Length: 303
Image (cartoon, rainbow, N blue to C red; front, side, top):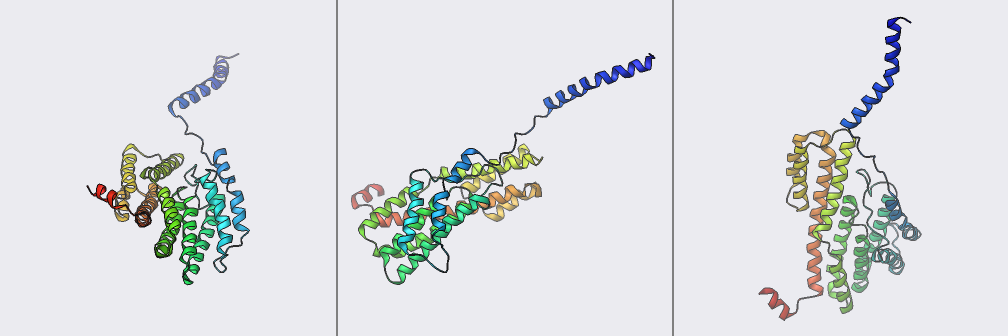
């Protein structure tokens, strides 16, 4: 065998070892990102828990043109509220950036929840027309409790639920002078229980920010340290309700269109936090009306 043939054969024999070595080096230099998660068993189980209440609501055949009677609406609304109180129906938090109550089964659940809430709000208005403020207050309180079930699922659900709760709170304010003493006591307690802490809003924003950060990483353009610090600073202002929309856009503009998804998320988060803060103040105002501070306690509080 000629010398050139022997060298050639040796080169071919060593080629697999060279390829394996190179792969090993590349694996050392570049650690692949974790696999994308599109769902989890826990997430699916949370969705499945809503199956019976969604079906019960759909069987009412709700529409804006025909509002069902308050007893029928109450019966189904109580199923939602009981499920939430027993922790069987919990917020449908996202498991990846594009996971939202705007799509798929989660959208259907939120839509059904909003549909019965809207009908309760209509029922409250109908009761007000006949000056039946006891029934009106009942309808508005049910609508408020019902929407609290999904309120902290994600930003989309938070905005949708808060808007309906604002209408329910307006109805409760109008109905206040016609409520029974029992209603004032019970509704005051329920409103107290509904007030969410700053931590819960912050948790929702932080969770979704992390998912969007992972999303841009999966697309091959992870945030630089400078970008991450800048966006975290913006997020802190969003959570604290200390930034206007125009200021947010101005701060984000230098980072370019590749970061548009994170900017949009922060912009929607700003609206959600602002609305939630306004709602919390109105809730506290109603609580003070329903459970006024006794004179001696008011004196102590003033001191």
